[in-house]
Image (tube, rainbow, N blue to C red; front, top):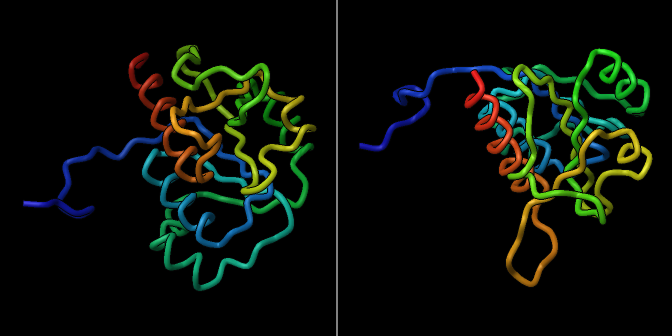
Length: 169
């Protein structure tokens, strides 16, 4: 029998991960980010950039997870990034760069607090935020395309992070 969220045996768990979106603006992607944040026990979600109206398309894809996930909207992220650094968060950006490493290779110290930055659908993580990060990771891909949907990529990376965090507990 197929289980649903009422009958599954998953144990609710939270992780010290703050997910930061740098100008992600498509309503369907934002709704899916909330579902992904909820699924992976993300502590807080920050929507960076111009305030986006969380309308009907958002609601359809979020499936009410915005009521379960702590979040805020900030037009600029630089001050928040500095605040997180002062709180000893490890800043990790998801972006393909000359210096990025596969997300599967990242080592996370025990009890690591992670600020995970993802970029907008067209331009990725801004250069100013990349410069602030401790690590830049990418997802290894084997086809001809060099990118995937921001939420799909975020899900893969969060899976890797939570797998590593739970292995150290």
